[in-house]
Image (cartoon, rainbow, N blue to C red; front, side, top):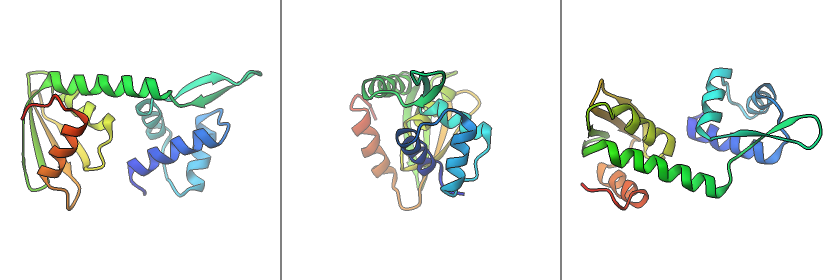
Length: 157
């Protein structure tokens, strides 16, 4: 199965290219491109991408992507969620440990996931105040921090 990030890019391309009225139709296009995706996974992907449905001007609705302004506003919200919740970031090898305020681990992990950093394979939110992020092979903690600071200049180390 292809990676999630490439699948998300394919979904965006398909929505921009074709008039897609249903998840079933989108699943068909994805299968033609070699993705084996469940309806539940596709629903999560569409939610993550903030895909909506708009009237096609006739008797139906088609999927649409948010505009650039909405995307930037949404990304800024994710950045603020991250910044409000984290306390510190440390790393060793390909593991990043983000300590959070009590009750903020889920929000911080969800923010990282939604921002879809190429450097991160996945995140795990600890029970209450810790997030673990696994970096891709060959990505150092320093490289990840550089990328994070580009997206979040307000970040204190």
